Length: 360
Ligand code: NAI
Ligand code: MG
Image (cartoon, rainbow, N blue to C red; front, top):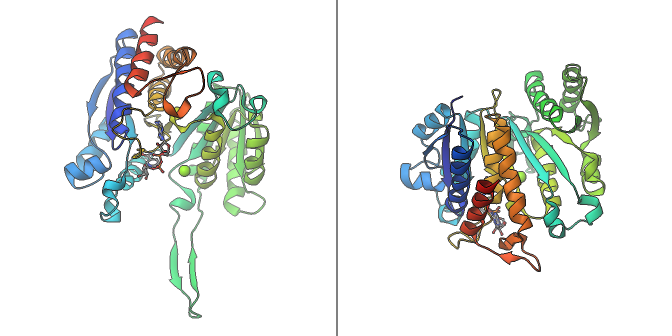
């Protein structure tokens, strides 16, 4: 299987955390004989500085040719004053929509070693391991028409549109069911079908897709209840599938059950499981250049890449195990630091994961 990986370190802490993720990927490449070939390019502010665009055409073409993309983070105050159409974040939205990366997987896993880092009671979050599957290229964020105007009365007025087609729902529902099938075999579809027509279609299509997955237990929940249940009893969930807007909110909410955003990886997949893998956090300008950022979210994104795009389950599991071993050694970056642990920098953390992986 071809394993051409395009690495886009991005801006801010992006290059720092990516150096550690690549360190771990190169080691996994040798250890498991993966045959991965890495190439590099710029995205976001770094691309604006180099190409005059946050996503150059040639970079998009390289991304199309690659089997998977590994991304750091983009953005920062340096580019605040430039034309809004050329801002770093635009490059990220464009690469997601151009590559049709509609399936956004955001796992929220609480490592037992970090139980004290969560703001919720230990009994509520201990052992937490859920996956939010968010539709990423449709719904209200992309819906047309949308408009802002001033009415004849002089009142300001604006509206957005929340469209979903059967095929859009069908393909994200399949991602949800496929994910549930290889996990706890429970899928909760979250919508607002008591109010929204788009949600009624959503629920109908999810039910239909479910007929092909008799081994997965399907349930439905209204989004307001889901928000409540996520903090009341999050362990009732295994996989949650939901639309773009609801998924944006619920996945951020779920991520905070686990303590630090520096721990959370993500995958954005197209219909053939080609994907872009990135930490959930941004470019953290406040700590960029200091060598103190947590690289684990990006290292765990490498694990997701090996699992989802390349079906290299053994290598993916090994990287997760190495991360867990390093947490057992009580090594902590600042964002997950607690009493009795040893504070380490970005590179030390990456070295420790690589060493643990090597010795497995
Ligand atoms: P952020 O996620 O960059 O930072 C939020 C807070 O978390 C900061 O205090 C930061 O120091 C901390 N943090 C983030 N990642 C960390 C890590 N790995 N280790 C330790 N601490 C970490 O969000 P913020 O500050 O809202 O945005 C900064 C820039 O990043 C903006 O330009 C924003 O547009 C961009 N951004 C980019 C994203 C992406 O590339 N996917 C996602 C979110 C924001
Ligand atoms: Mg968000």
